[in-house]
Image (cartoon, rainbow, N blue to C red; front, side):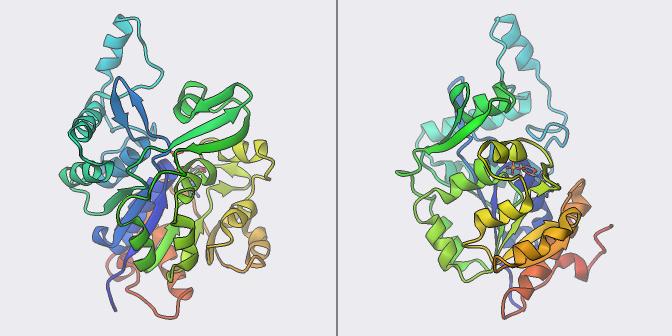
Length: 331
Ligand code: GDP
């Protein structure tokens, strides 16, 4: 059986969890992750890439599981100093985390692309999977709300996603190119997984880039999306609220419909098992399982099931899940 070539589409928390599971299920070198950069922004002149950092810290084993952002055990000494200056920022950066943003910004100021910088930082953190920013060009998610058009971080962090959303814009995406190798990776992947990330805030910015949607339509690999909506609710964050505000029923069925033109498989949570037929009738295979990932073993177990599901969706069986061959995933 030949080596596998997994490609994941991810935002932050939901994406990073499944990416970690895939790494355990098939091995780090077999996994590449295309990460949303629509949330990127500049603070104190620093280039901050929240989703890239969440994926990178998670795969490096240093992510903070409590907050969903930043580094475990990090201090916030710098915040106290900002407060002394009367400039308490609404976006907090941990002290160790700050090193990432300082180095990234310096390298980019010297001419490196975000892809190059990400590769360097990830290598130093001993992350063997390829983390690919969706684009090296600026794309900014703008959230049109009852409080006006807000840059993503203002909507998400400053206003804690409470404003009512009327629409979304991915500013710059018409001119932005996918980062080098993204389209080739889609073409040559054995399996493509759309992680249980927010479809509108994390995955759509990636899909909005020139050539990505067409590449997915033409991909030979099975494409499997995992639901971020369970029993009508998001596990974390604004996905369900946002769907309601956009006039879409917050349901796994609508997530499947959102991706229906290019996916062949959908992973539905066992709590929504009764929706199976509705989703199958859209012409895709459905895996019903527990999609809640509370810990590393549950991430690996879900990823293993996705590996097996992918094998059912293609003519040729690939390498299978490493955990089936070595250890039980501990569930
Ligand atoms: P963000 O950029 O940090 O908001 O992260 P993502 O867009 O990658 O992930 C947010 C989405 O992940 C939310 O819509 C959650 O419902 C979903 N999510 C988080 N944890 C889990 C989980 O354990 N299982 C499933 N199925 N979805 C999850």
